[in-house]
Length: 220
Length: 221
Image 1 (cartoon, rainbow over the protein chains, first blue to last red):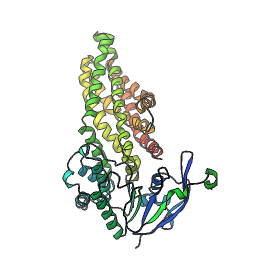
Image 2 (tube, one colour):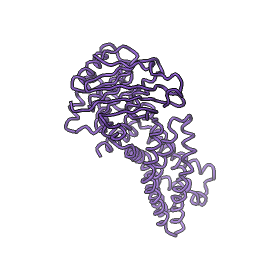
Image 3 (cartoon, rainbow over the protein chains, first blue to last red):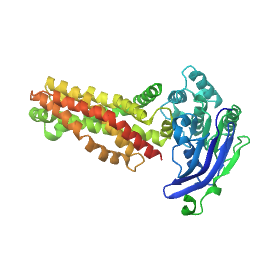
Image 4 (spheres, chains in turn brown, orange):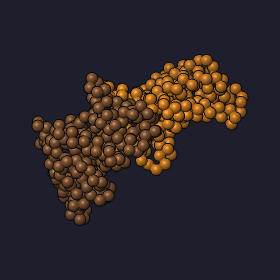
């Protein structure tokens, strides 16, 4: 594998006045997976947003190989696929349009795009509803449209926030299958979930363990 | 460039497909102008005198009406996160969204204005100037509005906050837009006004995407 590891060193995150977690370190090699667990409010979403460079860490460093990700943020962001806890699906567009737009925005080559789009719809069994406006879809179907972005615009690091919420049993196994295939081809995943999800051998981070005792003790 | 066009096309088709946006803006524009004769009386001299000002003010308010939707939907459903992570710089994303907003609101406003000008009895020369001034001035409305829309993201009662932020900034385009029609009505030539209006639009084009992108990054924190 030529791709460097994603390394976190002593990450801390502050939301408003409150230090959410501190002193968090991990190493994510190619093909690796990280499962984030913890109570509500323990910082699973915050950590994912820090990894996505959407919020700046209050302390510590995030390294892509040897270099800090801020140094090459555009190159690093091109490696990311982020599925937040919101679906980002417009009621007025169809799943096919949503995915095609997303692929174009990510700069997917136009020769590969249609083929990837069909693969994305097939992976999450959206073929039947592909040309319905998303306002007709159920919560689980919208969730699958959000997840299908992962296939329509491939990237090496998947950041998934509660990916299985609203999914039924069958579709959760489709998601687990997609994650397994992604890892087998050298991709990596970070999954925040409070419901059991089988993503194969994964390092688990329980964020409650990184909650600072007091703001002052951990800020340095 | 492909990403820019994709975002422009998506925003435009959302605005046109939901039908509401453009139709509502034009409906509001027409009704607001039609209300004035009931308030100030139907005398042609009065209407001629204040007609251009009425149409410009109504256009400002109509443009304002649709501004809260510019980033709000993307902010609420999480797509703004994805936009911020895409290969398209946020400044260009703002520009694409403003361009779509202008085509869906500013352009239809300018195209409707000659018909409303007939209602307030403007002379043909003034009608042409009014149309030109709206065509040149409305891009500034979309661009300046995008800064206020980005700044007011997540605020409670966003619509009100947005109006308070943006209306003072709309004063320069209003002065020169309405001034152009006035000048052409008295025959002193509208060229200078239209040039200043163009300058305002170009300045907004150069500055507003940066300001909006900075405000959006703040909102995403």
